[in-house]
Length: 110
Image (cartoon, rainbow, N blue to C red; front, side):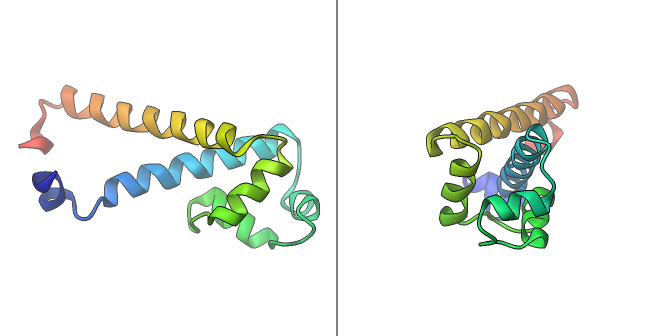
């Protein structure tokens, strides 16, 4: 892992893909219910603002555990189910990135 950190910095790349995975899953869930940010905020008893919800979906704000648990509940998911959805998306993003590196001759890994 040392070489990876030297080249990419303290897991910046991994954090970026994780934030994107969280953002995409949250947006897809909200849209699958045909909810606006206002609708979702109301479902959450206005514990969070529309702007904050938007920031989660844009990857601008990191999701804290209490909000993760609340969102899982609102979407009628067990926390483990929401985690698995996010994790599968994250793995997919990393896999795509790895494929791009391999196609490019692995230059970024040297």
